[in-house]
Image 1 (cartoon, rainbow, N blue to C red):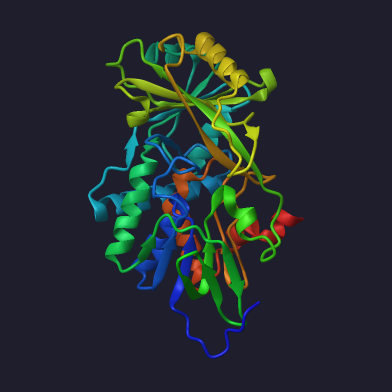
Image 2 (image 1 turned 180 degrees about the horizontal axis):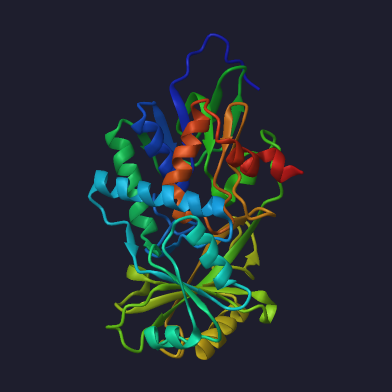
Length: 380
């Protein structure tokens, strides 16, 4: 610990990590007139973490009404960001949920109870509407689902944060954080800053960044594989979809129109929500797991005849998991911890930024959120 006696903070907040959550936090803080520095270890939009690419799924479909409510707030903030920056970031395609273990009827009931439009279709109706897919039971469709362009979103948030006065640093890895009585010191190789609050939005780097500073719950980092399949008929527009059948290891498969990531028009990105290879942010190989590839190919062959037989492109990204798959979003002294989002946080990014800004400015989250996302809850 260093002495902070008599020193005035350089800025109100320093945000470490310039992916979706960090960029969103900087945007939120700067928009409130707070002085903020955003520090990213690599270039903005880099492919080493969890916030790159043109295709992240947006959906309202959660079995938990709390998350359904949060998706609605996030959707409003995506539109606000689009209005401020002139960028198209969220494209609605509609979304499907099916498979016995996905619980389409229960999801329909939750969405309707939350006043979100949804309809439950039988197998025949769904097959007629989406002939490129194979269904074996009821299917839930909700129109407020679609695709988030994560890479453009990061740059849009940073652009607006800068316009509101934020300072940004890329290729500036933080190698040390020190705490004084009332200040936090953040050091890179080139410079040091002080702030009243440091926000850790470091994703897969969280454990290393906060070692010795914050008692964190167990966080598991995995490298997840995704695969791009061409549409047999590229003129057909597909919705996003999630399928979980309760067999073959109870794996959840998802699909989303790939946008630029696909490398050509008419491409669907397919991935698994589980089964990634355990790794760390700095030791990931980027090598695609052959077993994951085979599981996805088998799924596509059986369930998605509207796609070409094999993937022509593939990539990987990182998930940072909590044991419950709820987020960590809490304040511990001078440090705010956010962004371990278990692979389902991208859709919420602008809302997470606002909630993190609340914590950074000394406000409290609503009681249900504070209890659900607190460090204490994750540790016990």
